[in-house]
Amino acid sequence: MKNLICVFIGLVIAFGATAQTMKEYKGGHTFTISLPDYMKRTVGLNDVAAIQYSSTEQDVAGFVIYDTKEELTLAELSFASIKEFYEGFISDFLSDQENRQVSEPVAKTKDGINFIECDASYFDKELEAEVFYLVGVVETKKSYYKVLAWSSAANKDKFKTDFQKILYSLKD
Image (cartoon, rainbow, N blue to C red; front, side):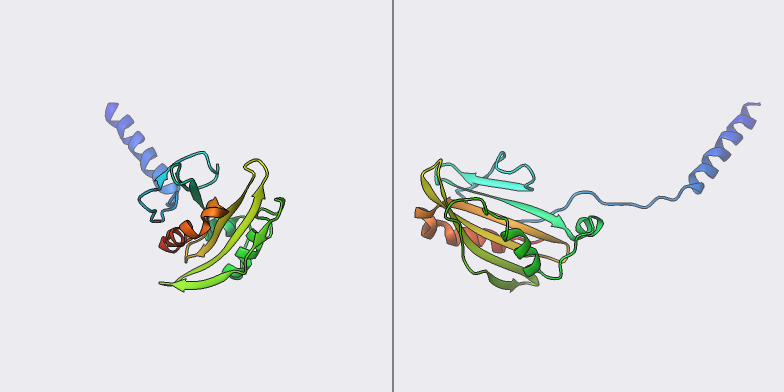
């Protein structure tokens, strides 16, 4: 009787396992980005950022947000180009801030990755100072990224090159 029960259980398991097919999905997304030695990873700058970085000593900070093209397609969003993605983002970025200024975008391609960058600034009433952002948008085969870094406008010339190095180091 024990043998018959074991055979029956074995058949149920075998037929149950073959009746259901499974498809494997990967979760998460991996990319790399390089930061200057004076910046360290942090938290609390942006709730949806994949990585956040800052230097309290230098008074600079930034973060990266990404949208995979697969997830955008699932959400029924599509962009014909990086320019269209950039325009959709920059039109709202800091739009409610006093004295908002955005430079003309500069587009580049490096190692098959598309980049657009611009300078943005506004007057922050709370800080009583002008804030400078380097805004970068990146398109890879897999994803779109928003790479933002900021400092006081008075320190723009000191940090802009480092912010650009961060932007152009991104790859997935």
